[in-house]
Length: 83
Image (cartoon, rainbow, N blue to C red; front, side):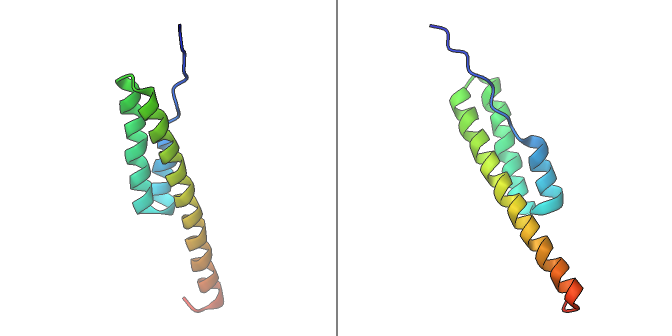
């Protein structure tokens, strides 16, 4: 029985963007999991690759949301003169 499964995305570019622009600590965690996706695919472990891909995606979403919230707070404080 031939089971062909597609390679899960690594979200590496998104992880790098989040590291540089949004939330450094979570961005680094996302880069680690993105790299683990590529390593798991290279050794043929698609189950681990899918799990790491999901984790990278979740961490990237959290990093992006936190980055937007923090940026909004900073802009609001600067605009009100409190910052």
